[in-house]
Length: 102
Image 1: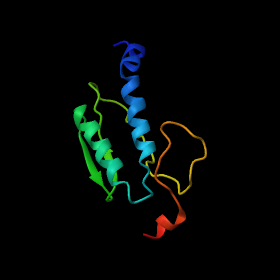
Image 2 (image 1 turned 180 degrees about the horizontal axis):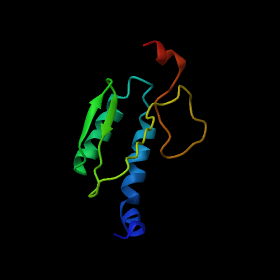
Image 3 (image 1 turned 90 degrees about the horizontal axis):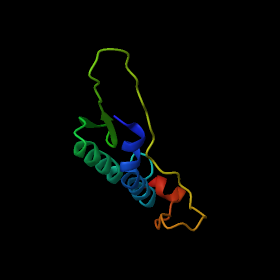
Image 4 (image 1 turned 60 degrees about the vertical axis):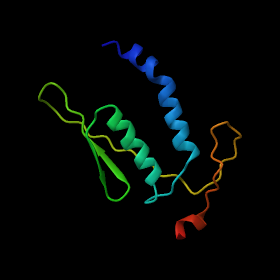
């Protein structure tokens, strides 16, 4: 498998996913839309996954051979701040500390 060619072939889709998540921020323990998007993508790729802890996701990738295991953890919650840069993928949704109390 040519990894560089594979990455190039999927780059546009990955950038679109990142921008979709960035435009729709969700604070911690409220990442329901983000969770649904991640599960949809994992299922599309045929990667087994499950919902955990309300808004989390665990996916399992299995190699063809036995051997060492690697774990990867990533955050998907937004910070309660408003962005200053004016970019096309900037979130139109305001984020404030008031959101933390809801």
